[in-house]
Image (cartoon, rainbow, N blue to C red):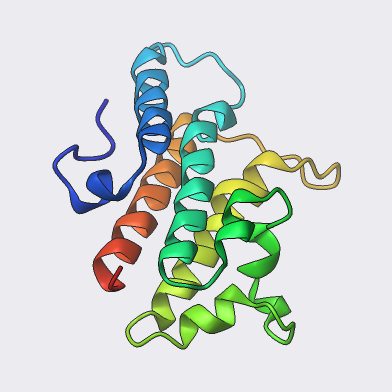
Length: 157
């Protein structure tokens, strides 16, 4: 199943590693049986979510929102720097991204799908245990890809 057009600006923007994750995710989607007997399809989201994290780091680097040492380092936490609740902090990528002409909505979209496509999928909450149906997983995957496409098309890199 093809999720991302290989002739798109987004595909051209992605590194080989991130393209590999997208391709792996597409293979996983293609391998799901029609019987759909799995109780939780969160695993389908993982390669796309991981590619999204890599995309965001490079996107932030290319927009000079993070430094090269942060990009290559192990300390940068996307969930912290992109979280609008941390806008008062000295280092808020969310706040700086909103300041780029035409990117106000991009910042909000990138955060919303980060929360939906990573935090709510991969964290365990005993009071709110979530399982994804195949349809929910596919919708999240499409939203992750759409957010990346939107960011690439709306921000000058």
